[in-house]
Image (tube, rainbow, N blue to C red):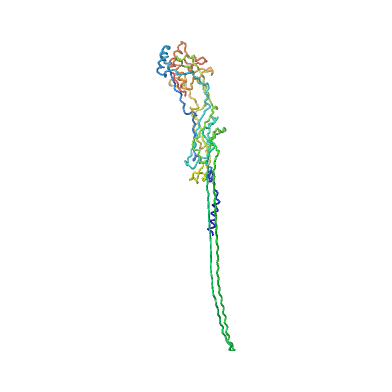
Length: 472
């Protein structure tokens, strides 16, 4: 009887089972663990800063008159021979760049607004396909001399994720039959006969005989029977088809002005790791501590007939504003993250049966990483000068009517400095042709004057001893 009862209960229990989809579950069990001290042992975050146009754009090669096809070049030389009196002027013509126009130079170059491209690298140190970074916020703290103006992410990110289609069907059928019969049959048959004879003689000599006979027959029969029959049948089925979608924050950026910190936030979804690279473009302002330097550019140094005279040159003052400091500028990297670590249920691909520890924590100032945000030569421009050979001290000065005084003759490129020096040496004879000592040379018609440091006189030896150098 007891076994029959258990059997029937099992059938009923099976019938009452409820099926549920697997994909709709995030986990089987979760434990929240504060891992502030060891989150850095699970996740590594690093960053690098680059110019958005880091790939150099090579200028188009210069095409000189001498680069013309041979037949065209021969005809050009023939024509020049009829117009130019000397071979030097013919060579100068052949070195003229084809299509060359007078340079149009900016009057102001602002190097206080610096665009930078940030490449943030996120790595799961556990190297386990089961565990993953489920949420992370990378925090980049900039130096106090800088101010974040904007941040544009260009990471391709999706806001809606297809988690999948669930099509699940299951059924159970149970049927049980039980029968129990017990019987007992018994019979008793008996025959009993008793005969008693009693003879006595009284005193009066009479004889008395008494005889008693008893007879009995007994028959007994008992039948007992008991039967139990049970039948249970159950069927349960489950069928589900679900299209699952979830909106997440794939990547977003925010700026905390109070701490001068850029925050890049990401969150994942089931089965998606956040390892990899995140890229964003930022614009940095350095106007809090700037310097302004005056440089010069000279146009029309060369004409088709040779070098121009000093009064025909065009001078442009170029003001350059830049960050006034020395040394590389560093940025500090910290992060807050949530790490999904599975301690049971890791053998299946689905995450619905996972028992997980959700570890969360953040790095702080004691565990921060410092990376180079700007190298000194990226925010501080190079200035080129004309100095005496073997020195890096400016030898030439230029009076600017715009500035109202004389300052060292600075150039913002080596090409500009070399071109002007070449012109100056070509005009040595013209500059020194007078009998009066020359201390100032008028350049152009705008009021610019070329001078030597300390008011010294121009001489052939002085001019011949000049060279273009980087100001250090």
